Image 1 (tube, protein in one colour):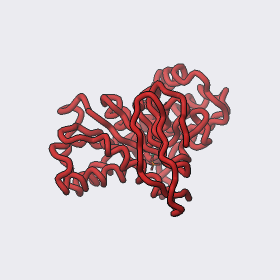
Image 2: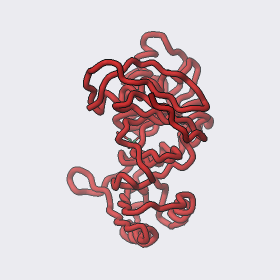
Image 3: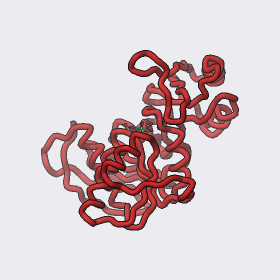
Length: 268
Ligand SMILES: O=C[C@H](O)[C@H](O)[C@H](O)COP(=O)(O)O
């Protein structure tokens, strides 16, 4: 739970920004996600091609974009959904949709994350959508990440939750073992993600996910990323390195906006 606050924001590319709590109203984690999402939608302008993220936080952003379109406050938006689920949501809201083939350059993507480190590196994919997200967000001029404060970590893997890796189903045990052995030095366990009935979880792309649980800081993330991607059978991993332009963090302190290449924090 957190306190509510006035949504006053000072925009700056140079410094991080905080809106301080003013009203003693308790907010849930979902309220915080919605606040971060609505703030991100402030970056949206009519005529933009938008990457539409996936997950419980991004859902609020997609809802908000639909609402602004319905009220005529946004026009000529084209959405590029990062999952089948987001595609369904956007269609239900009447958001016009397209894809990367037709729009290889995206103006702005908005999406949640599972972890954010101090350098704005991310873990994504605990909802299973990491491949399409990385393709779409990697093609974006601006990528705004929206999180509640629980997602902030000192280092990637620091939440002790999973670092997801999407792999082909063919001989998945072989690939999972290669992954585990590769990251063994960081106290790694590699588990096939299962669905509700105990069957392998299948991504929108027909692949499986191996969830890597790490005990220790991996240090050189670029080197680890390259090593994972070199393994035959691996399709993509959930580390989004140096991709986020801006991270909007909603928490008990209010809303903080961290921009790429700035590491200082001015809190009030
Ligand atoms: O595959 C899922 C996505 O990467 C989500 O953006 C991420 O898992 C965060 O989801 P949520 O906003 O539900 O915590």
